[in-house]
Amino acid sequence: MRLAEAWRVALDALRANRLRSLLTMLGVVIGVAAVVVLVAIGTGTKRKVESQVEGLGSNLLIVVPGQVTLGSAPSVSRLSLADVDAVSRVVGDRSRVAVTVASGELVRAGNRERFATVQGVLETTPAVFVRSLGRGSYLTRSDVDTGRRVAVLGAGVARAVFGDRDPIGQQVTIAGVRFRVIGVFAPLGQSLGVDRDGEVHIPVTTAHRLFGTTRIDGIAIKAPDRERINQLGDQVVATLRDRHPETEFSAVTQEQILGVLGDILGVLTGVLAAIAGISLLVGGVGVSNIMLVSVRERTREIGLRKAVGARPRDIGVQFLLEAVLLTSIGGAAGMALGVGTALVVQALSPIPAAITWWSLALAFGVSAAVGIVFGVVPAQRAGRLDPVVALRSE
Amino acid sequence: MTAAIEATGVTRTYELDGVRVPALRGVSLTVPEGDYVALVGPSGSGKSTLMHLLGGLDRPTSGRLVIGGRDVSRLDPADLARLRNETIGFVFQAFHLLPRTSAVDNVALPLVYRGLGARQRRARAAAMLERVGLGHRLGHRPNQLSGGEQQRVAIARALVTDPAVLLADEPTGNLDSATGQSVLALLEALNADSGVAVVLVTHDREVAARARRQIVLRDGVIV
Image 1 (cartoon, rainbow over the protein chains, first blue to last red):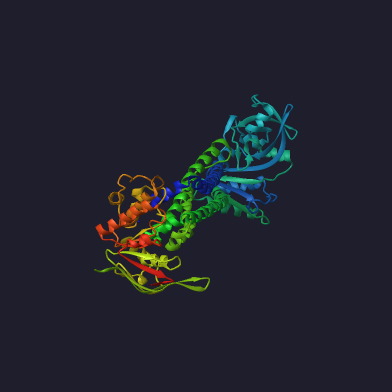
Image 2: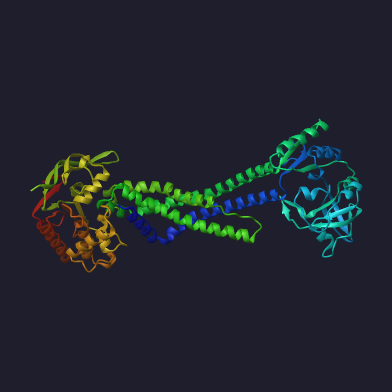
């Protein structure tokens, strides 16, 4: 039998039981759509996180005390401004070194207040991280050297305590101490789960007095070029170890953070795809089931076809094609449904979704394969039917 | 005259739950080309079993069976299928037409398994339907045809491959007597015109009497 003829017969058989064919396909449709949507969400999330990390600035090297591990509490820092000076000498350029000492404090203006992450920083911060001002100006070196009580507010904080009023030149109270607002950051939104519009930057020297400490939580360095970034990290860590032999330090680059996050999110995407794959498998079992019913119902037809010269293989191919057709049509419909759903999710919800070609190809390929795998048993059963018995069946 | 079918000492034993049930116990017969023979006998005599063997749907337990010059015992299921396609035409009591398929495509079905293209199949099927007097019914589906017309479609299907033997299993069993007569007349005309050997399986004495000769089976042997 020619293959074109076999396709026609298979299509005809599916048309003969329209509702049953559609319901059987539905299992595959849902499975494929689930794979496409979940992979799209996984991929979208990964891309968003990556762009956020990259958005921090390029060639970043972050130095913190202790080991960098995700999920464990950071160890108490023994770093001080003297260490920052030593690091600056290693880097050779003070303007490439940023620091932070952070504390959660109440920020108040008049009768309005908001809880904010107050960070003591150097005036170098905008040169190291990507951070743009909405209005006013940033801290200056003399602000840091003299410990002035001036503050740059995050967009969210400014909005919360000043509303629509212009905050520049106004007074705010941070932890009970009065500060003058000299700038407001441009809105940034959420990044890596942190509300970056809820930050307030003040000179690190002022912060030390305000918080009653001399510690530095972490140092960030903008390396002059990508090639020397790891070498620079080693030098900085070595310098700090000399100064604090009892403490461990680690330096991580943006690429390393991206790598770790990418791995985690890649695994997450894989797990999501696997879960969706289970539903595809269930759809395949449905196909197998319906094909067995179809073989039973058409036993007489199989007997007749054999009597007039169909070989076991001809009958087997016919039923296998029927199963593959079921899952392929279901797969195509599932792809369309999945892409549509992903686009709707992307447009209407904060969940990022990115459709990838490989997930479409995979889902469709798997659905066709499911047709073959789950069609083989019914097809073989049909092919092996004894024509005498088949012709006699009612 | 050469033989279309030659059976020598053919037996067929079924195994039911470990019990061996002999259906045929040594049958020898020859169907020469162009023969018109009736196979008769009471139910349980083994006529169906013999018909299945003569049609290449089944293989004998022992004995020698040669159909169209080929020894059936040496053929696997795929070769048997080809043998049926090339040498045998079947006509069944219950017609066995594909319900959602037009008369012409029903007749063309055996040609599908010959690998013929659709146009060629249709042309040959249409010509065959013309010969059985249904040239005006090509596009009708079985449920739009009378019983007699359906059996004529089945006969056209059996003959479209130009076989050596036409095996008809109670071809008039589902038809009223007038229609049955005309179907038999058609078979006889085709037998006379094209020289196809006709083997008629029946328990109807009147039908059997029209054949050139009769083979009577009882308890698995020819009497």
